[in-house]
Length: 311
Image (cartoon, rainbow, N blue to C red; front, side, top):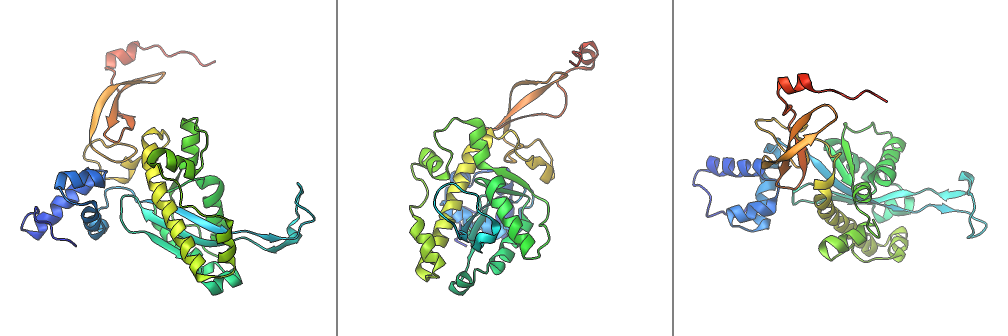
């Protein structure tokens, strides 16, 4: 860990100062400004103390790559192919994941021998270990693709369901909130950072199927790059996610926190009205809006409020 010349002399004070910052601030970039140091330095310190930062949920961003099925077909026209025509079923080729706001990337990919045998049991087990530690998982097209695929492999390889977690599908959130011309991760990356996914084509998958090590290395980097992009895509849409898992439920609350990011930097921003009550609305520094749980109405106002009848 790099030496921080602005830190207190005492190691314990150094530790407490950084832990306090990590629990208060949701953005590592913002901490670089506060501490006047590099982002790399902040990420190194965060990684060093990550086991002691338990006051926020563990949010896992991940992506998987798969090899296609081999099937017997009578032509390229539209047809319904029976399962008896399957020569080789699909397999999980690789996975990559990282914990939100942490520097370290975790990943695994089939070896050349495993590819030729189409045996993904080993990397399925390593994937299961990461999912089992997560409170919340994030992926692009999570519910229709990634989640069902990994569950299929967990089931087929005799693994139990991982510990309970909540899911965030960034694809669904962009579709729900915006009328974009495309919802592909590549296109969204171009919009928010002027850079999409790492360029590649189907020939890379063919080379991986042949067990070529150079292709496997390239595929793993491609997989990692997708997760790096996913983190930016998630953070950009996070303030708009009304169904975001409530981070406050995972924390030891001493004061109100943002439901989406867990920050305590909240400001009143008007009144949130329901058919039967009104509440103080709060806007977080991350941009998300929530409301206080306690009613903003007095007892007298509540007594005089008429509720409309059900239809």
